[in-house]
Image 1 (tube, helix red, strand yellow):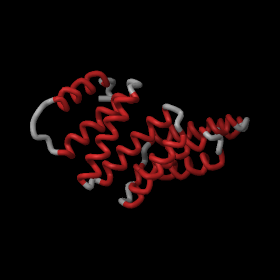
Image 2 (cartoon, rainbow, N blue to C red):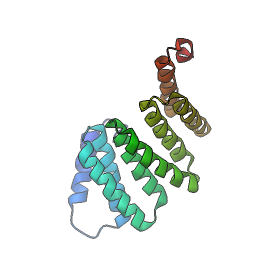
Image 3 (tube, rainbow, N blue to C red):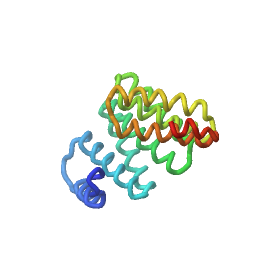
Length: 171
């Protein structure tokens, strides 16, 4: 829904589905909660999104679904970054990264490193941010994900700009 600009519609459908009574498998409920939380983030509704990510996280942990657990942690990290809480973002992205590494999930590793890089950038730890962004960039290149390659290059250019290194920023 997000990719096609149907955030409100997707949110409404997921809210309706989650409100239905009945026997819903915990993993299905957890994934719906995580999807709803992601759409709420796009709309700037961070408090309910956080609640949904946290409920999703608990359900994924109960089910032993490590990848989805890490995905929920990464969602919480994104919210922390958007709210300027670099300490919380570092905590949850570090936990997500450890899980992604344990299951060898390249995408998740790259996303977590970018989240950690953004937190380091927030603290003005620019060398650390550059290193983490470059590690994530290498992963995205291996995956061939042009969108995230471009986003990461943009983040690196922003750091170069912050350092008044305009030649590097334009590279």
